[in-house]
Amino acid sequence: MKVSVLIIVLALGASYCAFAQDIPTLPGKDLEPVSPESVLPLARVCESCHGQDGQSTRDEVPVIAGKPAAEIVAALEAFYYFERHCPKVDYENAEGAIESRSMCDITNELNQQEALALARYFEAAGNGSGQ
Ligand code: HEC
Image (tube, helix red, strand yellow):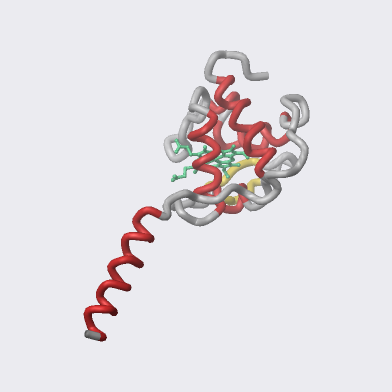
């Protein structure tokens, strides 16, 4: 009897995990929305790896220009919660120094409103309207 109860509990637990793929948002979802202009300095950081307007020319860095905003946000949330593999890659930071960082490091410094504004920026950049 005890064993079958245990099996039921384990089975329920396993199916819960299988469906619990709704990844939570980044911190700060209740902050003020970030305007398209004020997200530009952050977009420049992304572009130092992902290329101008997200049109990456590096094999190890994906193109994000024109990707639907919802997919970009979902990817950022997945990196933040270590749900996605995040290899470190070298890039040149704003001071011209070479740094090695991963998407997990990057998303650690973003809030949800910044993530939304960045996602809209790169989605639009795919239509040639990036700045
Ligand atoms: C240090 C370099 C670097 C920086 C800076 C960087 N990224 Fe990335 N990004 C990567 C790499 C490498 C991957 C691929 C990771 C993997 O293997 O899945 C990636 C993946 C992504 C993906 C998933 C794309 C896909 O097709 O699955 C998104 C979205 C993304 N980055 C957005 C951003 C945004 C937005 C910023 C700026 C806040 C940013 N990245 C800054 C290196 C970088």
